Image (cartoon, rainbow, N blue to C red; front, top):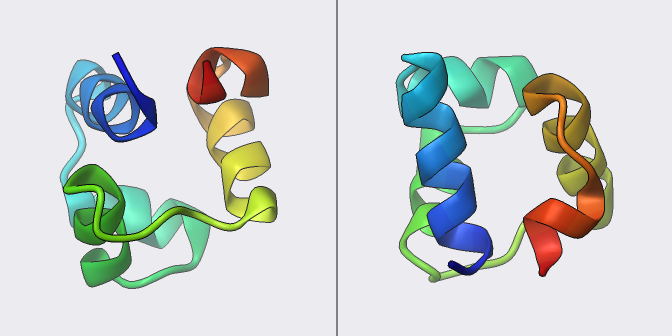
Length: 63
């Protein structure tokens, strides 16, 4: 499982939409879509924000 898979898995486990996650992180829905489809990588500050939101470590997201 890679970063994009983990983002999508955690988002769906929380029952939130891409738009909902985008709102939590202060990014566009398109940004979340690109992260989940491996078209781009989130910046480090967004990875940290996601780890806080999903209550996982940054290591979990990145490994």
